[in-house]
Amino acid sequence: MIEKAVNYIKQFVTGEFETGIICGSGLGSLGEKVENPVCVDYGDIPGFPVSTAPGHKGRFIFGTLSGRKVVCMQGRVHLYEGYPAGDVVMPIRVMKSLGVKNLIVTNAAGGINESFAVGDIMLITDHINFTGVNCLVGKNDDRFGVRFPDMTYAYSPALAEKAASCAGGLGMRLKKGVYIGCIGPSYETPAEIRAFRTLGADAVGMSTVQEVIAANHCSMSVLGFSLICNKAAGISGERLTEEEVLETGRLKAEEMQKLIIKITGEL
Image (cartoon, rainbow, N blue to C red; front, side):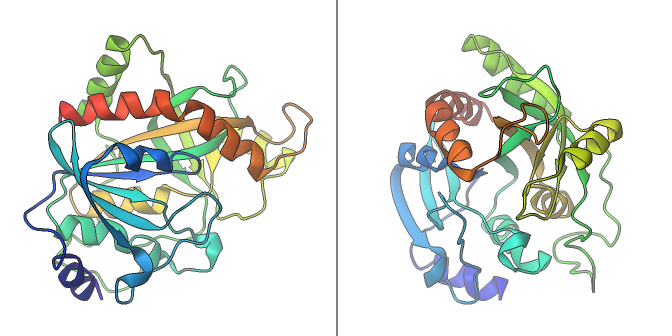
């Protein structure tokens, strides 16, 4: 399936791409910044999972950003959409097959750390996989990586340092923290959020962890960001809605884009 997908995409693009960028909820407008874009809808790729989440266009954009050849994913697929973990990470393996070495993942997340404000950008330093599944379960595909990949540096310290430097150059202040990934689609309960805080999580969401596991399996260097779109359940006392998440994404999109564009140019 991966080979079929890659062969289909190669009808429209040539050469290898250096960096892959996954746009989270409300952040898809970054794809509009890609120069000389070639768009390929997920639904047109044989056997490829199609994104159904609100605010996810569901397509690859191939082109250049800050002079670098990039693959931008406008939308991802999630476990809560009913896809098995292997399908959720299929885009990662396709990007690897197209030459991608660096992966930038973004997501919309709920703030568990009470010092975080809505609109903060958190540099992900580590994650907790609370989904109950792992995309590497089953027969190992030796073309991509070893049976037991190390996750000590799941998020590249070198890329994190570069990101902090770029943010400083733009006058931006990044938060840093641990992301915990849940399967969804229901938001977490206040009791779960208190438990997650005890576990050491700073932000919570329904994506990213499977993609990062697959990227490490493929020996990619990973950089991750969470846009804090709401206070997690029980902190503010308000009900959580997807509209709030998407609206915060739209309001902070320009700031996030400037940072990713600058980082991409220095990779």
